[in-house]
Length: 183
Image 1 (cartoon, one colour):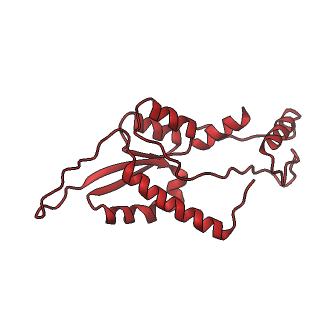
Image 2: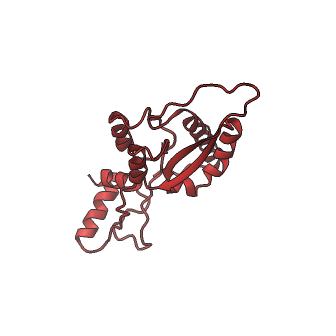
Image 3: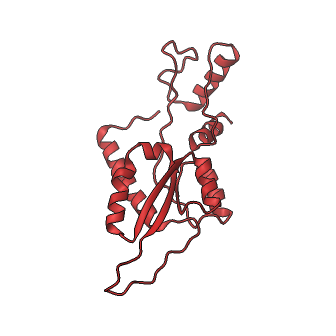
């Protein structure tokens, strides 16, 4: 389990901010941008861009920084964020209820694009997954750096009635990752 230091976090956040700004500007769910330029006396029409993203990204405060900068650089766009789980965001893209998606379930994202619902998929950021449990550590995994061994230990402790695994079970990117780890 990896814990980045403060300098690493700042670099990672700066990279995420730049990548998200680029993604917001370049990636869409199958809709082409209007490339006709207004005449110098016309004010460009403002187009609303629906960004469907995960609740964790919304809750991080990242959009509070990125969206004003994006809208200042490209005043012809107004970004509206709809924060939902990854599964719901992907459904919004499929039904064309969102223009841009920022989610975290690579296999589902690749399938989404391959099925013709999206134009392009880019890695923007990554997640650290942490296993949190009681201080008594009934599975004996505290300090483990081997996720597979930790999951096996949790399964064995659960089968023995010593531990309980709690899942989100909500088709979010976190839940999809959890299922992949269990498999």
